[in-house]
Image (cartoon, rainbow, N blue to C red; front, top):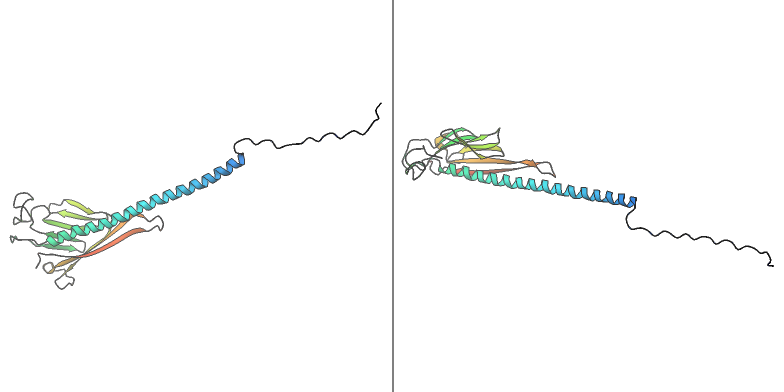
Amino acid sequence: MSKPGRRSPAPVPRHFPAAREDGFSLVEFLVGAVVLLVLSAGVFTMLTDAQSTSGYQGEVIEVMENTRLTMSVLGRYIAQAGNNPLAASFNPLTITSSTQVTLRADLTGSAGGNQGDPDGDILDEDEEVTIRFNSGAGSIELVDRNGTVRTLARGISGFSMEYLGADGAATTVETDVRSIRVTVTGLSSAANPRTGKTFGQTVTGVYTLQNQG
């Protein structure tokens, strides 16, 4: 018969961490989503800023080209004014104001229509042209002898002409005018996305009436 003895303590069960299943917990998912949203917002802002900047830069180039071309065309009209090899009867220019002048020249027509050499009149195309500034529309216009209006340039915020005599001094006496100082200011319609300011460019040139005097 065995002797009663002390019982051995029951073994303590050991708990091992359960193996982690693949995937993210809800907290990790939320953190990742927030990070993704922040990054996406940053990228979107960069793209929007780049697009705005690109559009503004395009307008800057357009303003520069627009003012350059406008000055070139006006210079050509002024240089031709007074061309009159057949001694026709007309005044080379009529001054209306600092923003409007009418220029005349006998340029073509001897071959019929608007073709050939000067024909002794100013009835052909581009032989009588009024240059004027439409401040309401922000444009420089060319008006022919029949009243037909052509827009030479848009996006113009300023335009002026100063009529100069042989000594370079300003004059309003039409027969004394030997050159015209032209000033054109172009303005972008879009503002710089960084500064909020529009781009403007002012160009000035002096053009000689080669057939005057």
